[in-house]
Image (tube, rainbow, N blue to C red; front, side, top):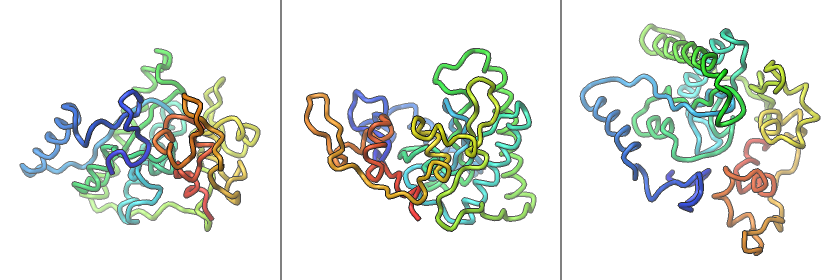
Length: 274
């Protein structure tokens, strides 16, 4: 799924996908290292890829809003929730749990998607640590480290118990009939106090904050709404020429204005379809 969604072929973009899969030495070395271990009989139970920011613990898939087979996704989600529960026990912070595409946005090229689809490593997580910026205050270093330690430990213990100690097969997470529902907990926090901010408290923030719309579609009135691209989009290229939605999918992950004008192109309509 190289560069299919959530990435750009423009070398000047901060979401540039490169010239091809594993075209740089760092990702190629990581791939070769894991595959060498597996070729020599080692079992890889879990892989994690830690990012900033947003307080999320996410599993495959990233490239599509569709979920993995139920038996696999149940395991992914159960151990992701175990991590989130452990993190909440450290500092009271709520992490959103679910597939990457349904928690944050669609994006291709994630290591957890690759290792799951290619090598069947079920427990693969993309993690977004606490706070709301790429450069949070240094006061977050220690609490974030403590949260990550407890979250990692809980996730590994959960996966080990299921795979090696006869833990029961988890029940799939509940969904609504429409497939469109607020996240509970939302994973959002109030900026001043750091306390959890649940969807029922956030209707006045729907218009201004995309993250609220993504995590609280019921509260924001999106579940029954018509979801389609603006035509014309109302957007323009830097040279002033019109930029229709069908030409600018590569900018979906970078610009909120593109996601708002072109929700269907950006894969957001699938999240809110009845």
